Amino acid sequence: MNAAPPAPAALLARSTCRALEQLGYASLLEFPLANGRRADILALGKSGDLLIVEIKSSVADFRADRKWAAYWEFADRLYFAVPNAFPVVLIPEECGLIVADGFGAAVLRHGVETPLAAARRKAVTLRFALAAASRLRHQLDPQAGLLPEL
Image: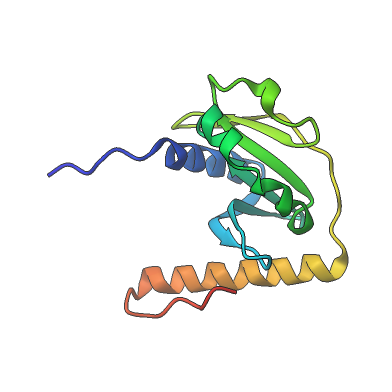
């Protein structure tokens, strides 16, 4: 039996993470933030900078969801990843823009940088490390419990 094809958002996430990796970032999907929201992608760079990428697979998806404004306090930059046909004029100028398909992605614009305070950076980075370690452990041992939402 064949598996269902990945959803458009999953394809955008895959290609966006590939592009981020080429730029020196490690990425986690569906990352829980301290404010109760979940970032589609949280990426940690070699210099310790943090990016959040909000995936929008359609205009309807973009218009129906405004929670992304709550992500500014957890990253140095905020990006939107959208498909090739997305009308990019809808993306706010202060946000970065990534255009992606199922295979690759390109950063077309870097958004405004708003550096995190040192204490917030440390807290988010620690949560990133704990989540990554927990997910890896679960991959190695599916019977292991994942850490509770941080």
